[in-house]
Image 1: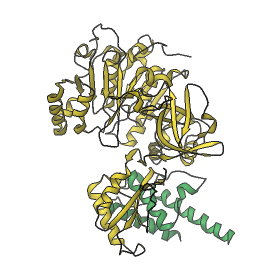
Image 2: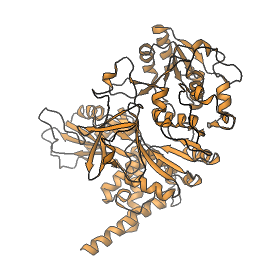
Image 3: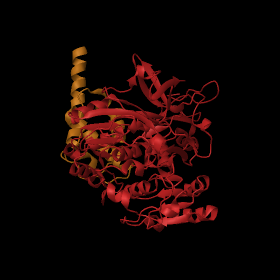
Image 4: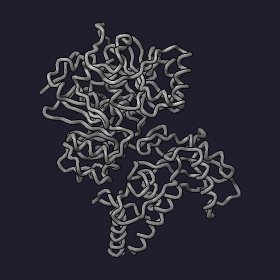
Length: 476
Length: 93
């Protein structure tokens, strides 16, 4: 049994004494890098030492580029802010200001995009950050001997008001769930459908680095067929993704070319159908589903093959304390984020130190089941939808009195968006309003991204409104 | 009955493709569903529409489940669900 170094405070400290780094790899769609090369090399053209002790924003197209910079700067930079692949350049100046960014490490190809150039120009006016382009990885250019730091890791998650929330972690919080579980021996090849610049994918990246494994990175520019072929080529043993990722994979003829020993789901509500289906498809694989979020960290894993989680998880004391308050799951552990950047910890935790996940659960018998988000946020194949945004648009239509947007379960994307619409008086809701429906949908299609357009519009006579005048949402 | 289920599915596919402005490949039985021109979101919408039109939700209702890879598989899942429903209604009726 190999245990990661107990007191390591960075990726580098965890890996530096591992004898097998030369035979462990990060594979992207275009490149292969051994962990030794990653540890000894630099992709910052010799400018890494100048970034020691500073706040650094990392923006890349490619996950491997981000991975190499993380390995290079963790333990040296004061703060690393990791841009997810869909970060909007419009948000960059705000992030630069709030995270006191001293340097932007970026993929030079982003500079060819007008929106990125503009974002960086505005950022430079605000704080004058240094722009450090990512170069090819070259050997030998080691970091200057500076005192190792405990780097602050900042992850971005989509906020309700548009601007991303900046969630602060450390190497300790990010790896607590990994260090508490004994590492498996043997030749482990991790694969993930996630992007490593978000919490779920970052967990797999760190799991691969701190354990004994290698990792096959996904690539946004690659087809699922090609990704599955690469996973097969590298004989993936441990594969993770959301239920939507897995559903899509199993509809692909190439799904049968891989034979993972371990399949894990998280990031969306996991239902019994997908668990059964995975079990039938990969009969030799151990199948687990985990509850984790950027703010709450990895809370628990369920391995009994059933949806939901056993009721005795709640109130049990251990590495993770779980409580349910107002039907919402709350988590206290060493794995949760420490705070949102720019706020104190009270905005993240309640008085008992628990992070409120906002996930609503219901107890049936000896088990809890997930019902959805308290905020009403709908997850369509991994993409978040705020109902209010769509309702606002629907309500502006001249024929619409009011509307309620809710999720509808779907076997392919987990959920779809459905709209219940009350028409203005004088219009009977039972008439055939096919033309009106089409007109409403046309407005939505012109304004909204596809996953936000209601799949079904129902005309209804009335909607439930609470005594406080708020619309009663399904899960609230 | 099965012919009509197939034709209903085909016409729903064409409707979803038109709404989503997607070009369709020729719809043969051995066409891989995710390569017919509809992506997974469009197929999700198709399944929701078929639930309304046929009143069948075979992916959620059935215990014996697998994901359809080809268009032929997809149609068979619905035909099978319809046969089960007819059988059930005869037994209970």
